[in-house]
Amino acid sequence: MKTPVIVGAAECDLGVTNKSILELQAQAVSRALADAGLKISDVDGIATNAISRFSASSLADYLGIEPKFTDSTFAGGSSFEMYVARAYHAVASGQCNVVVISFASNQRSAKSRSLGGVVEHHTPEAQFETAYGPLFPLSYYAMAAQRYIHDFPNGRAALSEIAISAREWALLNPKAYRYGTASLTVAELESADMMSSPLQASDCCLVTDGGGAIIITNSEIAKGLKSKPVSILGFGESTTNTSMTTHRDLRVTGAKQSGDIAFAMAGVSRSDIDVVELYDSFTITTLLSLEGLGFAGKGEGAEFVLDGKTRPGGTFPLNTNGGGLSYCHPGQYGILLLIEAVRQLRGECGDRQVANAKLAVAHGTGGILSTNATVILGAN
Amino acid sequence: MFPYLPHEDAISAPFWAATRERKLVIQYCSTCDQHQWYPRAICISCATENLTWREVSGQGTVDSWTTVHRAPTEGFVPPYVIARVLLSEKVIMLTRLVGIESPACDQVVELSWQELSDGRALPVFG
Image (cartoon, rainbow over all chains, first blue to last red; front, side):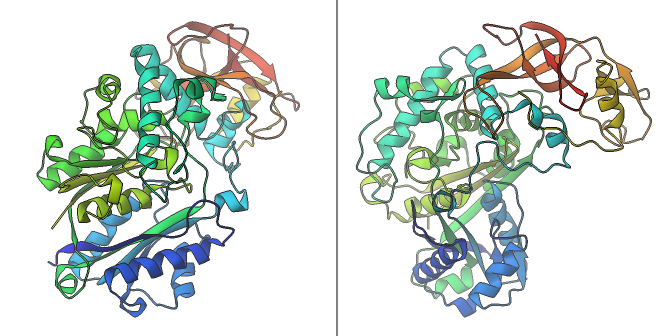
């Protein structure tokens, strides 16, 4: 069995690009290959989605390659953490040697995002939920937050702290959408538009263009490359629901299962982790993931974050690029979690670099807390 | 108020037909002695097709709720309250809360109806 490693990582243009999805995808792939020191002709595996109905075929054709392995698992923002697992197996078994995992969206330029989400009339959700008029996915996360705050009264303050912390990190990241702005103030948070109570605009991720790519190959090929390889130590996933009604406890997500599996595979403990990148589609997503992954006990996530430990300089560096809340959120943010984790482990993060980062967690969620996937990475 | 008319199919038709008489019916598996929501072709506990329909009590509690302040699509008029209601039959439905000034988790609620433009009706709670 060969040992898969990550050898390249790069973003495409972010923010408001006025570029097509495939142009942004090609940028991401080109830049990640340059970062790795590989050629496009070396690529024999592709994992991507959200280009078209046949996303992997589209990208392969656009790049002019005929891959031996493709995957287009479509699980929302956690898809890219799932692709790491799929690519790991493909490279380990020798099915292919160089997999590109990529994503890009032009949703802000194209104004393609709707507050009601995409309704597919034949599905049970369309038959039994759409008519009531929830914002999708926002209202589901709002109900999770409402229940959390009902049971744990410092929950509201914790959600605000998560937004404040993300902004502080973004102020250190020149590529962040909110770079060059200012710290979030209590007055700003209190006056932010209510979207779906208790979630306000300040609890919601950005809507931007963007994306990126990472490259996975085997350790033999990696030896000949200029880049510092990053080890894939563990991964796990969980798929829990697509209806707003089937998951019984809104406070408990699939992060528990995905995290437990990933940590067991990696053979490391929570306290060993140096840097944590958690999908922050909404502030409540981060809070529930911290608890699900076992960094905080059930109902203890609020107290965990309220002392400011997740901010720059704190003892628990969290969402160090500024997150989906303040850096970039192109619809499926999962690829950017991986890119930031890789860069932190390579020590490339400048002002926001976490000193001596050796172990990182990237954790994606997708849909309405529907899918969770955890990846644990290590520096070499 | 309710601009979206849900599609129905062979599995869900009995549910929608009952709403015309303002009856809330839910699938029930006699093998497993449990209800399930939403309607499916099989029981999610035993995977058999031995499902019947039962009219339910209409009593429930609010699992969680949210006041929606933006319209998801044209035709919806916010603000309104969306909720997950846990029925006494131990299934959770997505619904709206009507006539409740200050909703709260765990609040006891009961069934009422909002008519759709085609004569069917949506179960709501208040």
